[in-house]
View 1 (tube, rainbow, N blue to C red):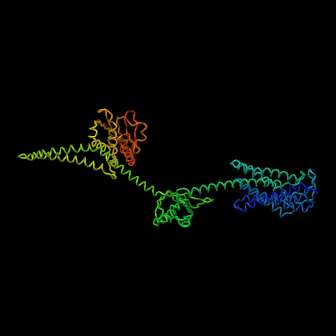
View 2 (cartoon, rainbow, N blue to C red; view 1 turned 45 degrees about the vertical axis):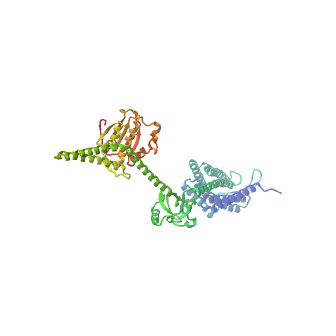
Length: 617
């Protein structure tokens, strides 16, 4: 039994492979119509299959008319390869000169019209004979002899040259942009096989090369290479799909287990998703809320406000750090801090949002309790400081009260005389009035310091406030034989603040300084208070010559309940710092080159300053 001729086997196999490639690519395109490259690849593979089949029939025929008809259909099949190939390159490499692709399409389209409507075909205007040739292994095949169809054949040959230029430019551009593998597979394969086929075919037409036409092998190889590229892309897409599914699973697990309320809202501001925590928080079932307006989650009195916000807000601004009370199925109200992530579809258009809420109901209650505790601590600190001043205040009150008693007794004696010395009595009464006013002033200052509520802001002179505190503490410092000196800037200007609170800070700093001097010998204990202007601030410095603050404790000195004293509770400096910051100022420890500590208390100011020195008190 004779075996099939090798040419028949080779061209038949090529036809079958190209048909299979065309079917696979076509089915992929039918599955996803947006992937135009698969449709173009299917057309090219089908064209290559047609070319292979026509070449096989042509090489075995001896009839001129049959060969003429075969060349007619062969040129049509070639056009179905070349035009899709040009646009495949344009889409796949995302580069290339679009105008050149249009020009090539137009020229080959015109060539197709010539092939259909003019005598002969695009290759030969007339075939005069069929010659029989043999391959190297002795297998016969047919080749035509005829007149080339000029100038049309030269025009389409020029269009083939333009394809080389177009593909070369697109390949280089894609390579430079980083798509190197795709540039080599797509552009490189097309260039290699077009060059081979483009050289071989004209030589066969001219009778210079005695081999069968092998256009199908060139385009079949191109189709195969392009299919490999698309298969590689499909594998990449498959891996990407698996990664997406993995990420979706992670996100799903996150949404299902995170202790935050997550609500999906579509472009119409209706609920389409709620995670388990949100459902548990609100007490609803998913089917009760799906399709409901998101405003149904808030109390009825706030629904119009929320709907107006959503209607007026631009994309990306909806629910940005917004606190709304949220109504549960039982009617209970929870305070939720909401923020949102805008969702977009594959085309980049807004597709709703994902609202993420944190239940702060309990934390807000704890914060209120904390603020209440802080206020109580401040009152306690006031009481502690004022308790330490009790002896000094008693001393100040004792002097005017003792004078009042002495003057009253003297007045009684003078009134008992005969006759009464009325002039002397009048003088004594004036002294009693002055002493009474002095006592009343001390009492008023004590009442202000004992006030537990907020102090109203007022304008006052910083230097006068400092001197009042020093006067109030005079007996305290006299008892400890501490020398207090001042260096107050003249015209330091008024500030607007809570005077009692500012004096409380100054008093606390002075008392701390006095305590720090306890280990020094009497006569060596010194405290200095300075006021000065520093840019837009008024600064008050309290310095002492005590042992200073250990370096490892400076950073903790303002921490709540931190103290270096055995009998301290560690709240005075922390509250003093908060008072300073509340007034837009600051309180800090300054390092000094000498022994002792220096605290800097700064407040906003506007007036220029000059400094005047005071002798030690």
